[in-house]
Length: 184
Image 1 (tube, helix red, strand yellow):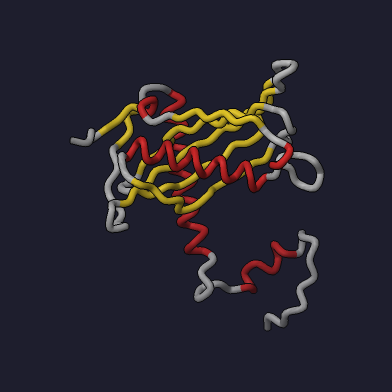
Image 2 (tube, rainbow, N blue to C red):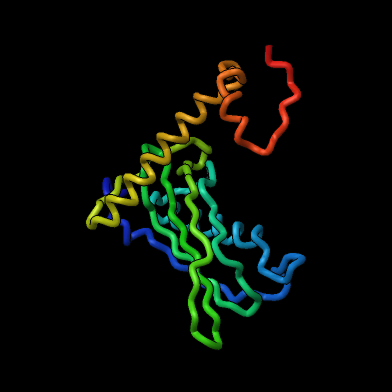
């Protein structure tokens, strides 16, 4: 029988991987796409562990590449369930890279993946709730909750059927653009 609520620590995942030359981009740094692939893997593992179901990526919110990852560094990915809805979970991911020679650790990336639990037929299924034990747990939950609300507002504000360019002309004046569309 599945638990109705789970401690965040029950679903946390840590994954480490040595960065190889084959993972580099044209500038010799580890390719962002490769890092995103690792993030998707750990988000899947964390969400599946929490829900005890197969999970799919619904969206990727906020991917901040803060520092480049170098060949030869040990990348450590940490994933935690920050928020749960009825069938979805927001997985917070932190990436650190360690220089194996010096022991120096740098924070390279933070991201939030929204994952949805699915049954064998591909239908969305309810997920266990979270037990919030610390101030950090509450802050992460509320931050994710607010991010979900803002995403919904953005979706509604910019619906193609309701969008009126004239309303935004004044705001556009402060940007590096040239509007040649006749709005009148």
